[in-house]
Length: 320
Ligand code: NAP
Image (tube, rainbow, N blue to C red; front, side, top):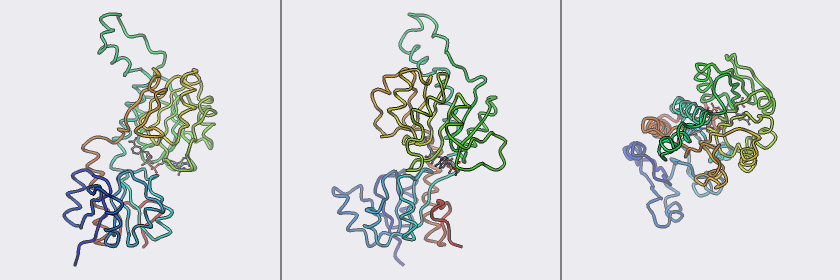
């Protein structure tokens, strides 16, 4: 029997390419000088797609009449129109759980970097200011006694909360629903959460529903001692409102791992001393990216061996 065809539109980690090559006929269309033509030529043979960040929308799906499964590298899948996939009976999978601890660790690191100005302090040493000017100025903010508000108390949000508990922080959260089995304080609005807390940690997914949820009103509610951390998706924050809030002192500082138009970060944000910026490195260790890659391969293998995916997204649940 011929091997199922898998479309790989962008280069992926070795662990993915090697894993897929063993089992499938790969259509690595990124190797072609004309990827669109390469996809058109492969289309009839393609039954699965291994996706790294690119848009999977109606136009993409229309090109692939025999597509059965879209295996997304990453837990966030706002790049994939899962409702359209569902309507066509196409399975969508993501890579939850295997990255939760790594992203939560990064979130806490980013929080501390931001509150205690650690990247500026490092620049102080490297730039020779310590020897030339003396001690780095005392930071105006401290982690001690902060009230942490988490937007999106899901897998990663809960792992962040567990870590924050160990730091002695009071924990509040907002999501569309109250989470079972947690003792943290639930707020039924984001503005209520921002009003109560001085530290806002964003871990919600991207997409239409969360687009620009954090805007000027929310930042004003967070207040002048406020710290905003975004480890979720850039689209959740209105970046222009954030730049204004950081420039005017409406909030104290922000730590950002994700941006609205990655990899482009507005110069106005880069110019601000009270913004700590990271290049979307939440899950970016070899260990964790390999685990994510193995899950991409695992989902495709499981689908074609058994008709079941390992980690289907909520829009395309496994049929019993
Ligand atoms: P998850 O378990 O699905 O948690 C998502 C949480 O967001 C849930 O608690 C959900 O609660 C809440 N939420 C969803 N839609 C919402 C809305 N419209 N309004 C308010 N809350 C909403 O996902 P996860 O594994 O924790 O991952 C969360 C996100 O982190 C991913 O989607 C991804 O965008 C991001 N991420 C970033 C990195 C990085 O490198 N920076 C790495 C991995 C993941 P309700 O259902 O109750 O609303």
